[in-house]
Structure formats: C-alpha cells, structure tokens
Image (cartoon, rainbow, N blue to C red; front, side, top):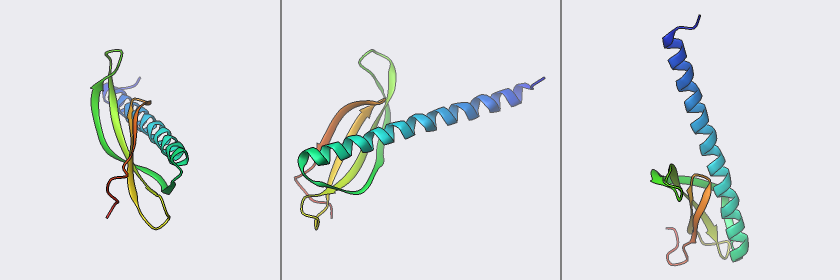
Length: 106
C-alpha cells in the first residue's frame, strides 16, 4: 500500500511536470509567433530564441484564471543593429506582438 507521504510527493512531482510541460508549450508558441512576426515585418530574428520576462495570473476571457506570460526576443533590420520585441500570451492564446522600433537595444 502506498503511504500518504509517497502519494503527496507523487502528486507534487506530477504537478511540477505538468506546469513545466505547459510552460514549454507556451515558449514554443511564443517562438513560432515571434518568427512569423519578423518574417511579416521583413526583419531578421536574432538568436532564434525567446526569453520569459514576466509571468502572472490573470482572468481569461471566460473568467477562469490563466497565466499571462510575456516573452522577449531580439531582431535586426540591417544585420548590424539590435531591436527588442515581445510576445504576450494568456495561457496559449496570443494577446499581442510588439516590434519596438523606437529605441535599439544597447
């Protein structure tokens, strides 16, 4: 018979694995969206990666709590400059893409 302590540990490990899996799906989605946004804007995505800069709980359109994540990426217009962009997701749903062309990354 499984002990209560073992059951709690198993549930916690399962929960951690599920959260990690969902976060990886969101990161992969943000990367795909960032690449598509760069192609649409005619700019080059640098480093082929996104990084998580903010995560917080928010109420979704249906009233349920979901995690809102903001990912940053960098792109170049000429190949010699660096600009910052962002992708914002609620759960796995796209909320916005921003290609910041006001100030380059220093």
